[in-house]
Length: 364
Image (cartoon, rainbow, N blue to C red; front, side, top):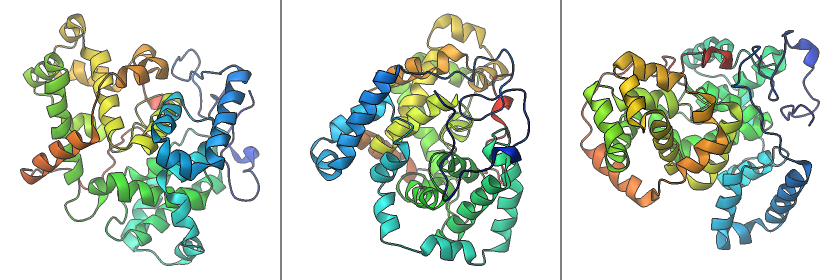
């Protein structure tokens, strides 16, 4: 299968601008010899064609499928959206396509506008830290597009501005969609799912609440894992700031992360809780695993460095679907926890939560 390139407006980026590297994975990241985290599941061509054919049928009659056959759309997303159609499907699922059509020319106006100085300075600092080992962001075009999308968001979403972590979300979108589409997807991502993580007022409140909701779900579904983390005083907030803030972009192999995003656009916030529970089960679900990770440091190491077995999409995704979480139950837990949220001191909203700058920094 040919190496995929991120779609861009106009011409493709010039690969000659990219830094030379010994080798790259299927997605364009620098690949270290002997590492198993760069795996790429290449489906048989006939399977790919059948899935593309099915999605083309869905896209051609989108309103009918989205309203009357939504459960089938979710099932298709769980199998993974073909890379050739991911851009179109994400735009439809999120509502970003409609938003963009209703706001023609707005993105270009925002890119040309003057942004708030502090936001722009933080964006400039974060760009070299964002997937620096990907060939696209080693080009001027890639860095410029990332800057423009984040600048436009910081102006358009005045209740958010800019906070670290947003650059990784925008980068994933840019590697799958053109810049203007990435902007509107980012807007819908914030408005529908992540606003409480990034907004200026009560910054990080959503992250604290999600940590408490995850603790509730752990107690309900994985009581022994919950007890183990309690014994070693491991705060679920540490898990959420690593996994949720950047939607697993810095924590899982790219192929697996894309499958999670495919599901996320179709099913919403319960996906991230399902995946978190599945990861914790795979890492600490057995007594021998908990015995081996018997301290704070050992647990942290396991969370930051899962094996390929524990984070492979064909293992993690089916495991996550075993947790039957209802969106209504999560909303109920969220409301309860939000109302009783204690005041906690957290790092600056412009601190970099997603500490590693390259995908090659993980699992070493």
